[in-house]
Amino acid sequence: MRPMRRLPRVDEAPYLIGLPERGDDRTRTRQPWYIAGFVLILGSIILRQPVLVVVGLLVITLGLIPDLWYRFCLSGVVVSRTFSTRHAQIGDEVILTLTVENRKLLPLPRIEIQDEVPETGVTIRGAFLETSVKSLRAQLVNILPLWAFQRVTRRYRMRCLTRGIYAFGPMRVESGDPFGFLEREAQIEAVERLVVYPLIVPVERLGLPSHAPFGERKAPRRFLEDPLRVAGVRAYALGDEPRRIHWKATARAGSLQSKVYESSTYHTLALFVDVRVRDDQILSYDAERLELALCTAASVATWGVENGYAVGLYANGTLAEIDDPAPLHQLTEVEEESDSLRLARIILATSVQPRLAPSTHSGQIVRVQETLARLIPYFAGPIADVITREEARLPFGSTVVYIGSAPALGVPGVVALDRLRRRGHAVVALLTGEEELPEHGVPVIRVGGAETWEQLQREALAEHPDDAEAAETRPTHGLVLERY
Image (cartoon, rainbow, N blue to C red; front, top):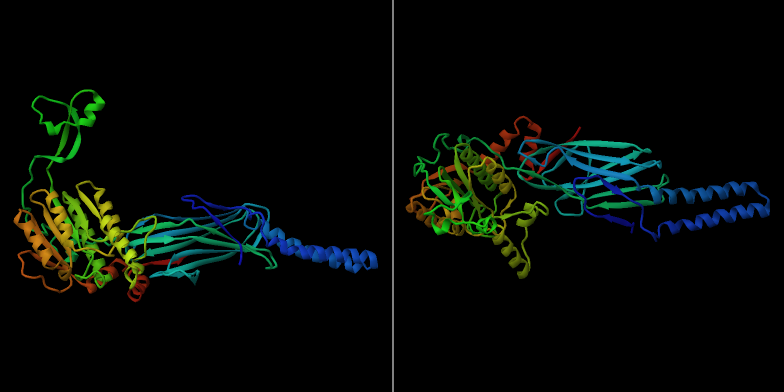
């Protein structure tokens, strides 16, 4: 077993590799070479054979050079991995730059760097790719020589095909002596993330009219104060209601202070995204229809913010953490697990469900995109539960849009939407697939199915036909890497 030196995770910085740890047994294997060399030299003196001196020196050299390279080959080696951007859209190109630098006099005849990259849906052109022992991972391999104080930079052009969070790393660095007797490895644990946002298209491509796609607004704009949105504080005025008093500001100022509320001069667009396709927690995942639903949500949210709506987003999936994202297929392909693990996953799913409060700020588009990029359809509960949880918080006259499939919505979801409609909200369902809803009074607009998503994806990659053709034959989640 080769010795492995594990380094702590370092973010946004080069990764410097140091000397091997003390007590390394690999260097002790060279001692017989030194003993044999000195014995030959001593024998040459006793036997008066000059040739044995040359042989002894050669043996000592063969023992010393591998020992020297093993001790110092990775000392002063700096490896860095950077992206041109950490956030991208589908169809964007991101440059991955790998830089290796040798900051010492000792040259390296061979250094090998293996960097873990996503395997599912990843094609690397112009570089060497090996299969990793980890599921859904591959090894991007770079083998090169480094002279003294030399730096080598290699760049790879990545094309983003589908939304998600993609992890790059850790890296394994290996080098050794010129004879290949001893090799040393170091593990760099740093992992970089690339977030790919869902596809955004004009609402007309989804079968929605560009003007008032959800009908006329249910309620006109009104200049009323919203008690849930505090804009600031002011001095207390005679006649202010007790509930307006800001007690924390009063304690700091030493005098009564009152809250100043924002005016409700906007309309609310509440998007309820259903990540399921059927009313089943095990067989409810469909990659193409899910991507179409998320594309629809991102496009409608963008249209809403641009048209002055306060856009809110609610979903019944789970948010993957950016620091430790779980691969989508790895989560959905689990067939058997213990009861305790299943319970832990259910608790996790119910505690980190995505929820974005309505906002008119332009940054809401980015927040919606990042939330949808992190969305995982794992152990998602019924969307009717999410609607019931949020219905009391929706301002009167909100436009409520359900985005998902008819079987996943089911009778409970239809009842929840109909209840919102009777309360004065404008309700519409944007359905993926051809299934019919139960008896209902909710307006329905069909945005398409798996074929629609494939067409939208091809159009997004139309400028790069090779990538578009590759996307048809690979799983929907991935990147295309291209070295130049």
